[in-house]
Length: 475
Image 1: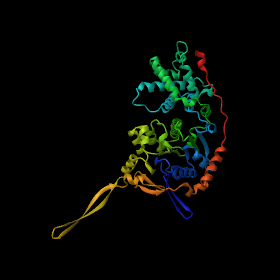
Image 2: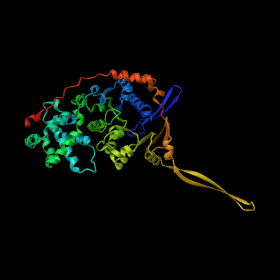
Image 3: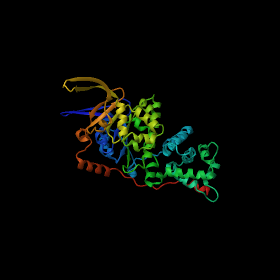
Image 4: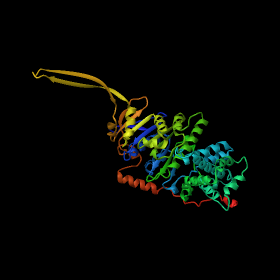
């Protein structure tokens, strides 16, 4: 992560964090995160040959850096939820499929619950546990059925067919539902049998709510374009840990609809990388850096605090970009959010509009002792006077909330565990040599560059959805 910059005539001096530690960047809207730190960090990691997984609202980072990284020998992957027909394909069921194909049903079930938990999200304390558990049971059972029953038909092993399975099998036909007949016909050793039982024992009206909630959670996969980018996989999740690879998760910036899928991908990718690291003695061959812009919009990632604890030792680094700390509090709760902050040994502050965020940063900076002087005079009616002076030592915040809120570009505050905090400069990308290396120029030239690179991307034809159709046997 880039933390500072100096320029002496034609020579640039770049300060960056090279340790296996995580970073937290606070920058409100229009604080210049992308042009002051993200692009430069991508360029620096590109020169170092390290892998990256980048969340990229608007595709701006992809447009500016992908050609540069190609020249550095990088494999380029795009998960494009803004223009799915231009995306590299990735099947979210791939970990389950691979485990089933290898005969490892324990791991397949584990991956199934991982997917389900990530899609459904954290437990709502205001909601009875039965509703969440029932919905998860329906989704998990459907995933396992779609994957296990279609080992000879991989074209059906995807989340679009999971949606269709629930939609068609859980619809009342006559006096019964096809799903009941399906479950009755399952052999005791079928991996879906035990999973479905969680929902099956609930009353009929309650089960109907489970089915409705499950379909709502999976609704994104009804889109033909999303089916096209998630029906199969063009790459392996382990690739980033084996060779220098950059994955751009391109997201629409005007809505947060697809952030749940971005969270799921980050989680699945992380699990795969940890397994790869464990297979080769505890460390990845190529260090992997998550650069998660607008992390506050991501849905909750299961056990994320624990992920941060484990990742550094495996040569995996997380760099999280937030507008304020309240975004973490709202998603994870105050206790887990505090653990996440504590697991990020480097904090970089650009700008915030939140007094609470400024207060947390002020407290983290600590205090120092300063001197105060006072002088007093007194006079009598006879004009006789006396003067007194005193000096006191007091403690004050290194930077108060108000002083933190007044920090402006190009200055940034850097706090690193075990070191004294510093204020450094991170000017706009236009002042860096990376501006030329990326092919960037002035505002109009950058607009044209983005347009040209977007138009040059290959666009796939939208595929027809291939449905399993097993429900036709139970009607």
